[in-house]
Image (cartoon, rainbow, N blue to C red; front, side, top):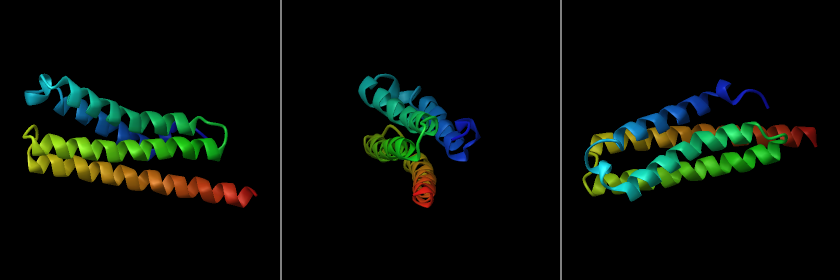
Length: 123
């Protein structure tokens, strides 16, 4: 499928994970190990599943991992919303992170559609 590091969606998802690590390393997150660690795992899962899927040998396998990555976007949006509602992050920061998750999700869905269409053309 090619080098996953060449995918714009992987870069964007990886940057999101780095930002989540930074924001969860300060303030109220420092003592809330549960939410902090869950947010970090979800964020890392997005780029990791994109990478793993891209290394699979078939579009079908690749798409399966892209669905996992997309599900992790939804998981992270939920956790960001909770973090905002309990006062760990402000509304502006929450909105920025949710927007980024939604954009990454759109990119993942586009890649899924692209790979689905390529599979259909081969049949």
